[in-house]
Image 1 (tube, rainbow, N blue to C red):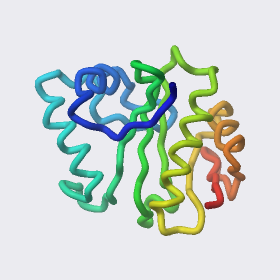
Image 2: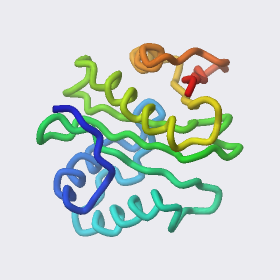
Image 3: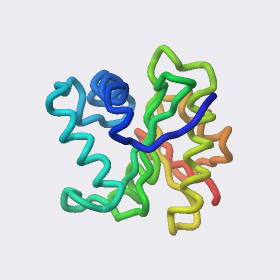
Image 4: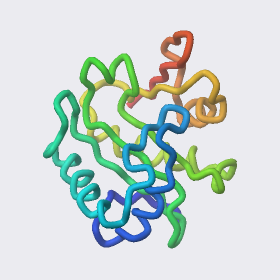
Length: 166
């Protein structure tokens, strides 16, 4: 069964193994915890959870809830929902960032995961649309966004800026 679960301490061992292995930068999905030791992950997870409540945020950051996409007992992806936009997010990463592990790509998990988090975003974000950004050299991710009702709002040399209506 496919489901999204917010980051939590009950699933810490599987969350740790998944987050540790996400590259530093995978097509614009930034993971500051790549290669983190298990000893340091407890504090990192506490920060991730606190960020969802708007606590322990670095200056200029907005509250962000991290979700893990589960299929049965395995994590296949991580999706981050920023609760609202600041100027850098309007012209940058937007509300949602997501990562699907390479071994699970091509199976529809990105499309289904984005659909699930977009449903949550519709009840969280105050803006009229859900903002996303995708690198131009990542057509698979653009396709995921378009399958979820997204449209290309504008583009620059490096990225497409996609919007999904609430």
